[in-house]
Image (tube, rainbow, N blue to C red; front, side):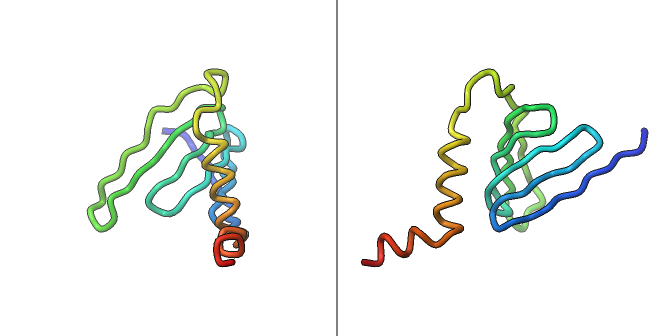
Length: 90
């Protein structure tokens, strides 16, 4: 097994992943994330809290279409900025 490197930068629900392979990004919470890895493959990961069980999809290439990722990123951005509470509290 060779050497590896990975560093994550967190900004709210967004995460930028820096690795030997390149730059990837994801959005979500601790237990559910949607993202694109450094090789351009989309993935979803789900963790069941307190059990140690998790699942990460094998991913599809970005050329297969955006899927639901843009909608998830937009929704996460709305919640992160507080616009949701402002719009729906009036």
